[in-house]
Length: 464
Image 1 (cartoon, helix red, strand yellow):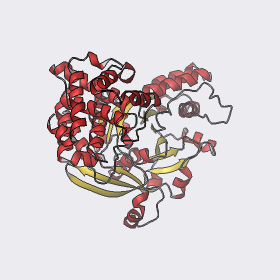
Image 2: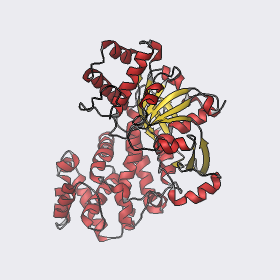
Image 3: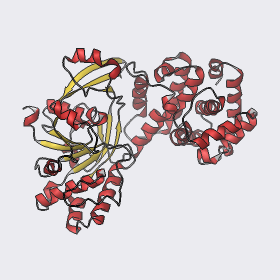
Image 4: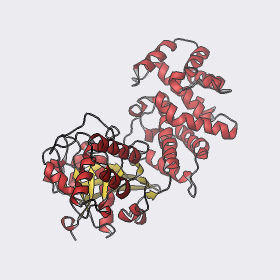
């Protein structure tokens, strides 16, 4: 059965790089294994987008998957044919609403950026108009389906958002409910949404650099045909879904070799990702930059900084994570492989953006949990904190952060080490609390700060 013969089972809000290298890639694999046998109708959520270009290519494109898995180099290209149609609701509103009338449709996926799941009380389209917000468009789609199938309880949809916000499904449903109230769509429709539709909470994880313009000529030679929508991603992928049981049957990716997990509580998986992947990223940035390195892979491959980051991950972060039936060391192993990816140049200076707030969210909770459980300060995270203060007061780097934060560090950089560290750690506006209240922390940060200032970073790391 060809792609065009598969019934439309998925309506997807978003035609960007991430969904095409994640959900559409998965569905393509499932179709190849006769495990889904459905196609995707892509909806362009914004007025300006790529659906016209997608349509011009018969909705085909190539996905380049590159990275390391289990120490083995992955470099593969796959032609994706899971998308069957592309709709611009701003130019073809009728085709958009016809998607709601397709009886085989079961699932809705979305990735409309973190700002996409919002309620706007000014979003009040008149008859025949399309809503401006994504939740508004989704509400209109559900109402059209409700009306077309005369409130048939079996025609509800399972909504699986992929936006990078906590409780994304819960928040999306709240927005839909607000539009039902705002637009006066009635109690019967509200009951149908509540009882016949479901909204999953998800966690998605895959680095997708997107269109590989710097190497596109080489890739097109390998592909053998023109493709303006080539999308590149790392090899790793993770999709954690907290949903009602029947969603597993609709989207059985967990049974076919894909890293998809259906769970009863997504919280520990989010904690694992934020602490290991994001926390390690944030911790390594000041260390690597002060050491004279430029990229994540250089930092993890260097004998000195690599050893330090490995110890920080396995000895200080991993012990603070608990997922029943799973070993967070396995996720940590995958993260190390991702950091070493030779196909992606991930510059430290680019991920140094807003490092202070990132440290507060991604590292400080781990720091405090480690201290609580061991009674000791995590010495490598403490060293990273000292490096962070040094990074912001050295004047050597063009850092991007809130101007008030940059101004604060500019005023204290002329102070002696003891006073500088005291003022930085006690600034509760930076950390949400006064860190000088943590016993022994100020003294250790001062010691590390002075060692960074008075000797080479290599020696400072060696002495941790």
